[in-house]
Amino acid sequence: MAIRQLTKQEIFDRVADHLAKQGAPAVGEIITDAGGEPACQYRAPNGRRCAIGALIPDELYEVRLEGSWASQLGERSSELFFYDKCGLGGVRGYFLDCLQNVHDEAAEDYSDRNPNVPNIETRDLWAIGLAERAKQFELIFDREAWERKYNHTLAVGPSA
Image 1 (spheres, one colour):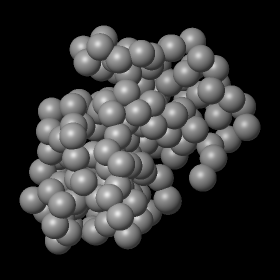
Image 2 (cartoon, helix red, strand yellow):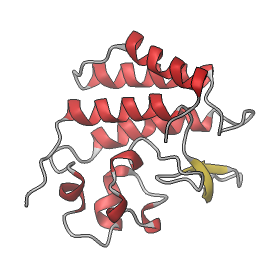
Image 3 (spheres, one colour):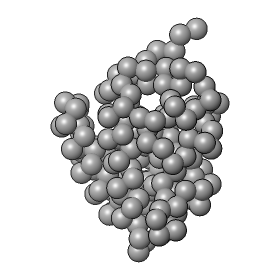
Image 4 (tube, one colour):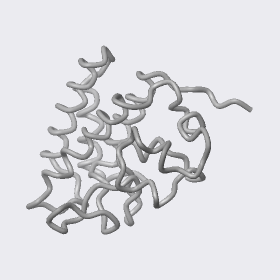
C-alpha cells in the first residue's frame, strides 16, 4: 500500500502544531554540542521530538539518525525509501532542513534556561522562525492562532 506523500503546507502545519503542543525543544544526552552541552535530538530521552522527529514514525526511527540534518536522513537510515515511508518523498532537502533549524535555533538559545520547560522566549523564537519559513516557502501561517495554542501549552503543560 502506497503512503500518501505530504505537501509542504501539510508538513509545515504538522511541525507548527507539534511545536506548539510540545512547548519545549527535544534536547538530550545522546548528542552534545562542541561545549559538551546537550544538543537537539530527533527523539530526546524525555520523549520529546524535534520538528522533523515528529514526522518520523516510530517504526522508522533509529538512534543512528541522530546528529544528521534532515536532508541526510535517507543516507543514515537502514530503510530503503525512508522519506517516502515517512510521507516526505516530495519535499526532501532544504525545506526539511529549514524546519529543523526553527526548532534547533530555539534550543540553542537555552543556555541559561531549563530546556524542559515551555516558556515565552521559545514561543517567540519559534513563532518568528515559523513565520519566516512560511514566507520563504509561500505557505500559510496564522501566527496569532499558533501563539494562542502555545500559550495554552504554557498554561496547562505540554501534551504527549
